[in-house]
Amino acid sequence: MTALPLSTQVAIVGAGPSGLLLGQLLHRAGVDAVIIERQSANYVLARIRAGVLEQVTMDLLDEAGVGSRMHQEGLLHGGFDLLFRQQRHRIDLHGLTGGQQVMVYGQTEVTRDLMQARSQAGLPTVYDAQEVQIHDFDQQRPRVSWRIGGRQHQLQCDFIAGCDGFHGVCRASVPPQSITEYEKVYPFGWLGLLADTRPVHHELIYVNSPRGFALCSQRSSTRSRYYLQVPLSDKVEQWSDQAFWDELRLRLDPQAREQLHTGPSLEKSIAPLRSFVAEPMRWGRLMLAGDAAHIVPPTGAKGLNLAASDVKYLSQALIEYYREGSQAGIDHYSDLCLRRIWRAERFSWWFTSLMHRFPENGEIGQKLQEAELDYLVHSESALRSVAENYVGLPLDFGLKKPGP
Ligand code: RFL
Ligand code: PHB
Image 1: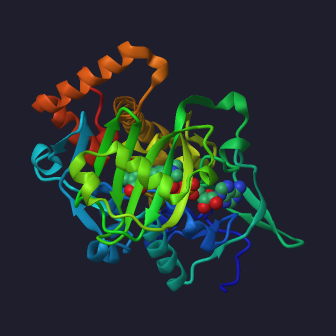
Image 2: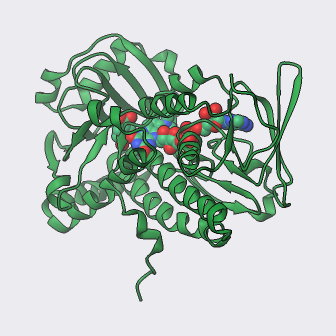
Protein backbone atom coordinates (compact mmCIF):
# COMPACT_ATOMS: atom_id res chain seq x y z
CA MET A 1 0.00 0.00 0.00
CA THR A 2 1.14 3.57 -0.78
CA ALA A 3 2.41 5.38 2.37
CA LEU A 4 -0.15 7.92 3.54
CA PRO A 5 0.96 11.58 3.43
CA LEU A 6 0.49 13.77 6.52
CA SER A 7 -0.97 16.54 4.42
CA THR A 8 -2.67 16.91 1.03
CA GLN A 9 -4.42 19.53 -1.07
CA VAL A 10 -7.94 18.02 -0.94
CA ALA A 11 -9.16 15.52 1.67
CA ILE A 12 -12.14 13.62 0.27
CA VAL A 13 -14.46 11.98 2.80
CA GLY A 14 -16.30 9.00 1.25
CA ALA A 15 -15.37 6.55 -1.54
CA GLY A 16 -18.78 6.33 -3.22
CA PRO A 17 -19.10 7.47 -6.83
CA SER A 18 -18.83 11.20 -5.85
CA GLY A 19 -15.59 10.83 -3.90
CA LEU A 20 -13.93 8.43 -6.35
CA LEU A 21 -14.86 10.50 -9.43
CA LEU A 22 -13.64 13.71 -7.77
CA GLY A 23 -10.36 12.00 -6.86
CA GLN A 24 -9.88 10.84 -10.44
CA LEU A 25 -10.64 14.23 -12.06
CA LEU A 26 -8.30 16.01 -9.61
CA HIS A 27 -5.54 13.46 -10.19
CA ARG A 28 -5.71 13.99 -13.96
CA ALA A 29 -5.31 17.74 -13.38
CA GLY A 30 -2.32 17.28 -11.04
CA VAL A 31 -4.18 18.12 -7.80
CA ASP A 32 -3.38 15.81 -4.86
CA ALA A 33 -6.17 14.18 -2.85
CA VAL A 34 -6.56 11.48 -0.21
CA ILE A 35 -9.86 9.58 0.15
CA ILE A 36 -11.02 8.43 3.59
CA GLU A 37 -13.85 5.86 3.61
CA ARG A 38 -15.51 4.28 6.61
CA GLN A 39 -16.38 0.96 4.95
CA SER A 40 -14.25 -1.64 3.15
CA ALA A 41 -13.92 -1.52 -0.66
CA ASN A 42 -15.90 -4.77 -0.93
CA TYR A 43 -18.73 -3.37 1.17
CA VAL A 44 -18.95 -0.29 -1.06
CA LEU A 45 -19.01 -2.54 -4.15
CA ALA A 46 -21.75 -4.76 -2.74
CA ARG A 47 -24.32 -1.93 -2.58
CA ILE A 48 -26.72 -2.23 -5.50
CA ARG A 49 -28.03 1.19 -6.46
CA ALA A 50 -28.32 3.28 -9.61
CA GLY A 51 -28.61 1.89 -13.09
CA VAL A 52 -29.16 4.77 -15.53
CA LEU A 53 -26.52 7.31 -16.64
CA GLU A 54 -27.23 10.56 -18.45
CA GLN A 55 -25.05 11.77 -21.35
CA VAL A 56 -23.41 14.33 -19.03
CA THR A 57 -22.33 11.51 -16.70
CA MET A 58 -21.05 9.36 -19.58
CA ASP A 59 -18.98 12.33 -20.83
CA LEU A 60 -17.57 12.89 -17.35
CA LEU A 61 -16.53 9.25 -16.98
CA ASP A 62 -14.77 9.56 -20.35
CA GLU A 63 -13.06 12.74 -19.19
CA ALA A 64 -11.91 10.90 -16.06
CA GLY A 65 -10.43 8.18 -18.30
CA VAL A 66 -12.69 5.41 -16.97
CA GLY A 67 -15.34 5.16 -19.71
CA SER A 68 -14.05 2.30 -21.87
CA ARG A 69 -15.76 -0.65 -20.13
CA MET A 70 -19.00 1.37 -19.91
CA HIS A 71 -18.96 1.83 -23.71
CA GLN A 72 -18.26 -1.88 -24.26
CA GLU A 73 -20.68 -3.38 -21.76
CA GLY A 74 -23.28 -0.66 -21.10
CA LEU A 75 -26.59 -0.60 -22.98
CA LEU A 76 -27.69 2.60 -24.74
CA HIS A 77 -31.45 3.14 -24.43
CA GLY A 78 -33.37 5.50 -26.70
CA GLY A 79 -36.65 5.22 -24.81
CA PHE A 80 -38.65 3.61 -22.00
CA ASP A 81 -42.23 2.39 -21.49
CA LEU A 82 -44.90 3.77 -19.19
CA LEU A 83 -47.50 1.15 -18.26
CA PHE A 84 -50.90 2.13 -16.85
CA ARG A 85 -54.43 0.77 -17.27
CA GLN A 86 -52.83 -2.41 -18.71
CA GLN A 87 -51.43 -0.45 -21.67
CA ARG A 88 -47.85 0.38 -22.49
CA HIS A 89 -46.84 3.74 -24.00
CA ARG A 90 -43.29 4.23 -25.25
CA ILE A 91 -41.52 7.50 -24.40
CA ASP A 92 -39.20 8.01 -27.37
CA LEU A 93 -36.32 9.80 -25.64
CA HIS A 94 -34.22 9.80 -28.80
CA GLY A 95 -36.93 11.27 -31.04
CA LEU A 96 -38.26 13.77 -28.51
CA THR A 97 -34.86 15.23 -27.56
CA GLY A 98 -33.15 15.42 -30.94
CA GLY A 99 -31.08 12.27 -30.58
CA GLN A 100 -30.23 11.93 -26.89
CA GLN A 101 -30.04 8.57 -25.12
CA VAL A 102 -29.27 7.21 -21.65
CA MET A 103 -26.83 4.45 -20.69
CA VAL A 104 -27.85 1.46 -18.59
CA TYR A 105 -24.67 0.65 -16.64
CA GLY A 106 -24.77 -0.14 -12.92
CA GLN A 107 -23.38 2.11 -10.21
CA THR A 108 -21.45 -0.92 -8.95
CA GLU A 109 -19.58 -1.07 -12.27
CA VAL A 110 -18.92 2.69 -12.30
CA THR A 111 -17.51 2.36 -8.77
CA ARG A 112 -15.42 -0.68 -9.73
CA ASP A 113 -13.92 1.16 -12.75
CA LEU A 114 -13.07 4.19 -10.60
CA MET A 115 -11.55 2.07 -7.81
CA GLN A 116 -9.41 0.21 -10.32
CA ALA A 117 -8.13 3.42 -11.95
CA ARG A 118 -7.30 4.79 -8.51
CA SER A 119 -5.36 1.76 -7.38
CA GLN A 120 -3.55 1.48 -10.75
CA ALA A 121 -2.38 5.09 -10.33
CA GLY A 122 -1.21 4.27 -6.77
CA LEU A 123 -3.39 7.00 -5.25
CA PRO A 124 -3.95 7.01 -1.48
CA THR A 125 -7.30 5.69 -0.19
CA VAL A 126 -8.00 4.77 3.42
CA TYR A 127 -10.72 2.13 3.88
CA ASP A 128 -12.26 0.93 7.17
CA ALA A 129 -11.65 4.32 8.83
CA GLN A 130 -13.54 4.56 12.13
CA GLU A 131 -14.72 7.70 13.95
CA VAL A 132 -13.97 9.99 11.00
CA GLN A 133 -14.14 13.64 12.06
CA ILE A 134 -13.52 16.93 10.27
CA HIS A 135 -11.97 19.97 11.98
CA ASP A 136 -11.22 23.68 11.38
CA PHE A 137 -12.97 23.91 8.01
CA ASP A 138 -13.73 27.57 8.78
CA GLN A 139 -9.96 28.23 8.94
CA GLN A 140 -7.01 28.13 6.50
CA ARG A 141 -5.79 24.60 7.33
CA PRO A 142 -8.62 22.11 7.93
CA ARG A 143 -7.96 18.57 9.21
CA VAL A 144 -9.57 15.16 8.99
CA SER A 145 -9.00 12.60 11.75
CA TRP A 146 -9.93 8.90 12.07
CA ARG A 147 -9.01 5.73 13.90
CA ILE A 148 -8.01 2.33 12.54
CA GLY A 149 -7.77 -0.40 15.14
CA GLY A 150 -6.26 1.34 18.15
CA ARG A 151 -4.36 3.99 16.13
CA GLN A 152 -5.40 7.60 15.65
CA HIS A 153 -4.60 9.28 12.29
CA GLN A 154 -4.73 12.87 11.09
CA LEU A 155 -4.50 14.56 7.70
CA GLN A 156 -4.03 18.30 7.07
CA CYS A 157 -5.42 19.80 3.87
CA ASP A 158 -6.47 22.98 2.03
CA PHE A 159 -10.06 21.81 1.41
CA ILE A 160 -12.40 19.05 2.57
CA ALA A 161 -14.79 17.52 0.01
CA GLY A 162 -17.76 16.00 1.87
CA CYS A 163 -18.71 13.08 -0.42
CA ASP A 164 -19.93 10.89 2.44
CA GLY A 165 -23.57 10.39 1.50
CA PHE A 166 -26.80 11.23 3.32
CA HIS A 167 -25.74 9.75 6.69
CA GLY A 168 -22.16 11.08 6.59
CA VAL A 169 -20.25 13.17 9.09
CA CYS A 170 -19.53 16.26 6.93
CA ARG A 171 -22.99 17.86 6.67
CA ALA A 172 -23.63 16.92 10.31
CA SER A 173 -20.49 18.87 11.37
CA VAL A 174 -21.78 22.20 10.09
CA PRO A 175 -23.36 24.36 12.83
CA PRO A 176 -27.14 23.87 12.45
CA GLN A 177 -27.81 27.62 12.30
CA SER A 178 -25.65 27.86 9.13
CA ILE A 179 -27.63 25.32 7.14
CA THR A 180 -31.21 25.09 5.86
CA GLU A 181 -32.57 21.63 5.17
CA TYR A 182 -35.65 20.99 3.00
CA GLU A 183 -37.11 17.51 3.31
CA LYS A 184 -40.07 15.36 2.23
CA VAL A 185 -40.28 11.71 3.26
CA TYR A 186 -42.62 9.53 1.15
CA PRO A 187 -44.98 7.08 2.88
CA PHE A 188 -43.57 4.01 1.07
CA GLY A 189 -40.30 2.39 0.00
CA TRP A 190 -38.90 0.44 -2.95
CA LEU A 191 -38.24 -3.26 -2.57
CA GLY A 192 -35.50 -4.11 -5.12
CA LEU A 193 -34.50 -7.53 -6.44
CA LEU A 194 -31.48 -8.38 -8.62
CA ALA A 195 -31.44 -11.67 -10.53
CA ASP A 196 -29.49 -13.37 -13.29
CA THR A 197 -32.50 -13.66 -15.56
CA ARG A 198 -33.19 -12.21 -19.01
CA PRO A 199 -34.89 -8.78 -18.65
CA VAL A 200 -38.61 -8.81 -19.39
CA HIS A 201 -38.16 -6.11 -22.08
CA HIS A 202 -35.22 -4.55 -23.95
CA GLU A 203 -36.00 -1.13 -22.40
CA LEU A 204 -37.17 -0.09 -18.89
CA ILE A 205 -40.87 -0.26 -17.95
CA TYR A 206 -42.23 2.16 -15.31
CA VAL A 207 -45.54 0.77 -14.03
CA ASN A 208 -48.49 2.53 -12.39
CA SER A 209 -50.86 -0.26 -11.29
CA PRO A 210 -53.76 -0.41 -8.81
CA ARG A 211 -51.46 -2.55 -6.60
CA GLY A 212 -48.73 0.14 -6.62
CA PHE A 213 -45.68 1.17 -8.61
CA ALA A 214 -43.25 -1.28 -10.18
CA LEU A 215 -40.11 -0.83 -12.26
CA CYS A 216 -38.56 -3.33 -14.65
CA SER A 217 -34.90 -2.40 -15.08
CA GLN A 218 -31.75 -4.29 -16.00
CA ARG A 219 -27.98 -4.39 -15.70
CA SER A 220 -27.20 -6.39 -18.86
CA SER A 221 -28.96 -8.69 -21.34
CA THR A 222 -28.75 -11.46 -18.73
CA ARG A 223 -29.18 -9.57 -15.43
CA SER A 224 -32.47 -7.94 -14.33
CA ARG A 225 -33.27 -5.40 -11.64
CA TYR A 226 -36.90 -5.04 -10.51
CA TYR A 227 -38.55 -2.80 -7.91
CA LEU A 228 -41.93 -2.81 -6.15
CA GLN A 229 -43.59 -0.02 -4.15
CA VAL A 230 -44.08 -1.44 -0.62
CA PRO A 231 -45.34 0.02 2.68
CA LEU A 232 -42.57 1.45 4.86
CA SER A 233 -43.51 -1.05 7.56
CA ASP A 234 -42.54 -4.04 5.34
CA LYS A 235 -39.33 -5.89 6.19
CA VAL A 236 -37.24 -7.52 3.49
CA GLU A 237 -37.35 -10.88 5.36
CA GLN A 238 -41.13 -10.93 4.81
CA TRP A 239 -40.58 -11.07 1.04
CA SER A 240 -39.57 -14.48 -0.32
CA ASP A 241 -38.35 -14.49 -3.93
CA GLN A 242 -41.58 -16.26 -4.89
CA ALA A 243 -43.70 -13.58 -3.19
CA PHE A 244 -41.77 -10.88 -5.07
CA TRP A 245 -42.23 -12.50 -8.49
CA ASP A 246 -45.93 -13.19 -7.79
CA GLU A 247 -46.54 -9.56 -6.85
CA LEU A 248 -44.56 -8.20 -9.79
CA ARG A 249 -46.59 -10.36 -12.19
CA LEU A 250 -49.80 -8.90 -10.79
CA ARG A 251 -48.60 -5.37 -11.56
CA LEU A 252 -47.61 -6.08 -15.21
CA ASP A 253 -49.59 -6.21 -18.46
CA PRO A 254 -50.46 -9.65 -19.94
CA GLN A 255 -47.61 -9.58 -22.48
CA ALA A 256 -44.92 -8.69 -19.93
CA ARG A 257 -46.38 -11.23 -17.49
CA GLU A 258 -45.90 -13.91 -20.11
CA GLN A 259 -42.34 -12.84 -20.92
CA LEU A 260 -41.16 -12.49 -17.31
CA HIS A 261 -38.24 -14.80 -16.47
CA THR A 262 -37.90 -15.50 -12.77
CA GLY A 263 -35.03 -16.97 -10.76
CA PRO A 264 -33.26 -16.83 -7.40
CA SER A 265 -32.39 -13.33 -6.15
CA LEU A 266 -28.75 -12.22 -5.94
CA GLU A 267 -29.76 -9.29 -3.72
CA LYS A 268 -32.97 -7.96 -2.19
CA SER A 269 -33.34 -4.76 -0.17
CA ILE A 270 -35.82 -2.02 0.77
CA ALA A 271 -34.93 1.65 0.22
CA PRO A 272 -36.97 4.51 1.71
CA LEU A 273 -37.82 7.42 -0.62
CA ARG A 274 -37.11 11.04 0.20
CA SER A 275 -36.58 14.45 -1.36
CA PHE A 276 -33.93 16.45 0.50
CA VAL A 277 -31.72 19.49 -0.13
CA ALA A 278 -29.25 21.19 2.24
CA GLU A 279 -28.37 24.80 1.44
CA PRO A 280 -25.73 26.12 1.02
CA MET A 281 -23.34 23.37 -0.09
CA ARG A 282 -20.19 25.15 1.05
CA TRP A 283 -19.05 26.51 4.40
CA GLY A 284 -15.53 27.95 4.43
CA ARG A 285 -13.25 25.20 3.15
CA LEU A 286 -15.81 22.39 3.30
CA MET A 287 -17.74 21.59 0.12
CA LEU A 288 -20.48 18.94 -0.01
CA ALA A 289 -21.19 16.89 -3.14
CA GLY A 290 -23.71 14.18 -4.08
CA ASP A 291 -26.00 12.50 -1.56
CA ALA A 292 -24.25 14.36 1.30
CA ALA A 293 -26.11 17.49 0.12
CA HIS A 294 -29.25 16.20 -1.59
CA ILE A 295 -31.44 13.14 -2.10
CA VAL A 296 -34.03 12.50 -4.80
CA PRO A 297 -36.54 9.64 -4.90
CA PRO A 298 -35.09 7.17 -7.46
CA THR A 299 -38.08 7.33 -9.85
CA GLY A 300 -36.35 9.85 -12.15
CA ALA A 301 -32.95 8.05 -12.00
CA LYS A 302 -31.29 11.34 -11.05
CA GLY A 303 -29.26 10.71 -7.84
CA LEU A 304 -25.99 9.45 -9.28
CA ASN A 305 -26.24 11.86 -12.20
CA LEU A 306 -26.63 14.85 -9.87
CA ALA A 307 -23.65 13.61 -7.85
CA ALA A 308 -21.62 13.53 -11.07
CA SER A 309 -22.56 17.10 -12.04
CA ASP A 310 -21.70 18.42 -8.54
CA VAL A 311 -18.33 16.72 -8.87
CA LYS A 312 -17.74 18.28 -12.28
CA TYR A 313 -18.38 21.78 -10.89
CA LEU A 314 -16.30 21.08 -7.77
CA SER A 315 -13.32 19.69 -9.66
CA GLN A 316 -13.40 22.71 -12.00
CA ALA A 317 -13.46 25.10 -9.03
CA LEU A 318 -10.55 23.37 -7.29
CA ILE A 319 -8.46 23.08 -10.47
CA GLU A 320 -9.04 26.81 -11.16
CA TYR A 321 -7.94 27.57 -7.58
CA TYR A 322 -4.66 25.67 -7.92
CA ARG A 323 -3.86 26.68 -11.53
CA GLU A 324 -4.90 30.33 -11.45
CA GLY A 325 -5.05 31.17 -7.77
CA SER A 326 -8.73 32.13 -8.30
CA GLN A 327 -11.33 31.64 -5.58
CA ALA A 328 -14.26 32.51 -7.93
CA GLY A 329 -15.27 28.91 -8.71
CA ILE A 330 -15.25 27.97 -5.01
CA ASP A 331 -17.39 31.02 -4.20
CA HIS A 332 -19.95 30.14 -6.89
CA TYR A 333 -19.92 26.37 -6.35
CA SER A 334 -23.05 26.14 -4.21
CA ASP A 335 -25.24 28.43 -6.37
CA LEU A 336 -24.13 26.71 -9.55
CA CYS A 337 -25.06 23.26 -8.23
CA LEU A 338 -28.31 24.22 -6.56
CA ARG A 339 -30.13 25.47 -9.64
CA ARG A 340 -29.60 22.14 -11.41
CA ILE A 341 -30.37 20.22 -8.21
CA TRP A 342 -33.74 21.91 -7.67
CA ARG A 343 -34.74 21.19 -11.28
CA ALA A 344 -33.93 17.50 -10.77
CA GLU A 345 -35.71 17.52 -7.38
CA ARG A 346 -38.84 18.88 -9.05
CA PHE A 347 -38.80 16.27 -11.81
CA SER A 348 -38.13 13.37 -9.42
CA TRP A 349 -40.93 14.51 -7.07
CA TRP A 350 -43.35 14.94 -10.00
CA PHE A 351 -42.55 11.56 -11.57
CA THR A 352 -42.83 9.86 -8.17
CA SER A 353 -46.23 11.51 -7.58
CA LEU A 354 -47.43 10.43 -11.02
CA MET A 355 -46.43 6.77 -10.78
CA HIS A 356 -47.07 5.65 -7.16
CA ARG A 357 -50.27 4.91 -5.24
CA PHE A 358 -51.12 7.47 -2.56
CA PRO A 359 -54.25 6.14 -0.79
CA GLU A 360 -54.07 9.14 1.59
CA ASN A 361 -54.92 11.43 -1.38
CA GLY A 362 -58.35 9.80 -1.67
CA GLU A 363 -60.37 9.07 -4.80
CA ILE A 364 -59.93 12.56 -6.17
CA GLY A 365 -56.16 12.18 -5.95
CA GLN A 366 -56.46 8.93 -7.90
CA LYS A 367 -58.67 10.47 -10.59
CA LEU A 368 -56.34 13.46 -11.00
CA GLN A 369 -53.36 11.14 -11.38
CA GLU A 370 -55.18 9.15 -14.07
CA ALA A 371 -56.08 12.38 -15.92
CA GLU A 372 -52.45 13.50 -15.81
CA LEU A 373 -51.23 10.17 -17.24
CA ASP A 374 -53.86 10.38 -19.98
CA TYR A 375 -52.82 13.96 -20.81
CA LEU A 376 -49.15 13.03 -20.81
CA VAL A 377 -49.35 10.26 -23.38
CA HIS A 378 -51.60 12.32 -25.68
CA SER A 379 -49.61 15.56 -25.62
CA GLU A 380 -46.39 15.90 -27.57
CA SER A 381 -45.37 18.90 -25.42
CA ALA A 382 -45.89 16.97 -22.20
CA LEU A 383 -43.95 13.98 -23.58
CA ARG A 384 -41.10 16.24 -24.67
CA SER A 385 -40.95 17.75 -21.20
CA VAL A 386 -40.61 14.30 -19.60
CA ALA A 387 -38.01 13.24 -22.16
CA GLU A 388 -35.80 16.32 -21.77
CA ASN A 389 -35.83 16.00 -17.99
CA TYR A 390 -35.17 12.25 -18.07
CA VAL A 391 -32.12 12.51 -20.36
CA GLY A 392 -30.84 15.33 -18.13
CA LEU A 393 -30.06 19.02 -18.33
CA PRO A 394 -26.88 20.23 -20.01
CA LEU A 395 -23.98 20.97 -17.66
CA ASP A 396 -23.99 24.67 -18.48
CA PHE A 397 -27.62 24.95 -17.27
CA GLY A 398 -26.52 26.42 -13.93
CA LEU A 399 -24.40 29.02 -15.77
CA LYS A 400 -27.30 30.43 -17.77
CA LYS A 401 -29.07 33.36 -16.17
CA PRO A 402 -32.75 32.73 -15.31
CA GLY A 403 -34.99 34.36 -17.95
CA PRO A 404 -36.90 37.65 -17.35
P1 RFL B 1 -22.86 7.29 -1.56
O1 RFL B 1 -22.94 6.35 -2.70
O2 RFL B 1 -23.81 7.16 -0.45
O3 RFL B 1 -21.36 7.22 -1.01
C1 RFL B 1 -20.97 7.84 0.20
C2 RFL B 1 -19.78 7.12 0.77
O4 RFL B 1 -19.38 7.75 1.97
C3 RFL B 1 -19.12 6.76 2.97
N1 RFL B 1 -19.27 7.38 4.31
C4 RFL B 1 -18.23 7.78 5.06
N2 RFL B 1 -16.90 7.75 4.85
C5 RFL B 1 -16.11 8.24 5.81
N3 RFL B 1 -16.58 8.74 6.99
C6 RFL B 1 -17.90 8.78 7.25
N4 RFL B 1 -18.35 9.28 8.41
C7 RFL B 1 -18.79 8.29 6.26
N5 RFL B 1 -20.14 8.20 6.19
C8 RFL B 1 -20.41 7.64 4.99
C9 RFL B 1 -20.14 5.67 2.68
O5 RFL B 1 -19.74 4.41 3.22
C10 RFL B 1 -20.14 5.67 1.14
O6 RFL B 1 -19.18 4.79 0.60
O7 RFL B 1 -22.98 8.82 -2.08
P2 RFL B 1 -22.45 9.49 -3.43
O8 RFL B 1 -21.04 9.07 -3.71
O9 RFL B 1 -22.80 10.91 -3.35
O10 RFL B 1 -23.32 8.79 -4.60
C11 RFL B 1 -24.70 9.01 -4.69
C12 RFL B 1 -25.39 7.80 -5.32
O11 RFL B 1 -24.98 6.64 -4.63
C13 RFL B 1 -26.93 7.90 -5.28
O12 RFL B 1 -27.34 9.21 -5.58
C14 RFL B 1 -27.61 6.96 -6.28
O13 RFL B 1 -27.38 5.61 -5.95
C15 RFL B 1 -29.13 7.20 -6.31
N6 RFL B 1 -29.84 6.26 -7.18
C16 RFL B 1 -29.89 6.43 -8.55
N7 RFL B 1 -29.23 7.46 -9.12
C17 RFL B 1 -29.21 7.60 -10.49
O14 RFL B 1 -28.60 8.58 -10.99
N8 RFL B 1 -29.83 6.69 -11.34
C18 RFL B 1 -30.51 5.63 -10.84
O15 RFL B 1 -30.98 4.81 -11.62
C19 RFL B 1 -30.58 5.48 -9.39
N9 RFL B 1 -31.24 4.44 -8.84
C20 RFL B 1 -30.54 5.16 -6.62
C21 RFL B 1 -31.23 4.27 -7.49
C22 RFL B 1 -30.55 4.94 -5.25
C23 RFL B 1 -31.25 3.88 -4.72
N10 RFL B 1 -31.22 3.70 -3.32
C24 RFL B 1 -30.78 2.51 -2.71
C25 RFL B 1 -31.41 4.84 -2.46
C26 RFL B 1 -31.93 3.20 -6.97
C27 RFL B 1 -31.98 3.02 -5.59
C28 RFL B 1 -32.80 1.87 -5.08
C1 PHB C 1 -32.11 0.81 -11.54
O1 PHB C 1 -31.86 0.09 -12.53
O2 PHB C 1 -31.64 0.57 -10.43
C2 PHB C 1 -32.97 2.01 -11.72
C3 PHB C 1 -33.35 2.40 -13.00
C4 PHB C 1 -34.17 3.51 -13.17
C5 PHB C 1 -34.62 4.20 -12.05
C6 PHB C 1 -34.24 3.80 -10.78
C7 PHB C 1 -33.41 2.70 -10.61
O3 PHB C 1 -35.45 5.25 -12.22
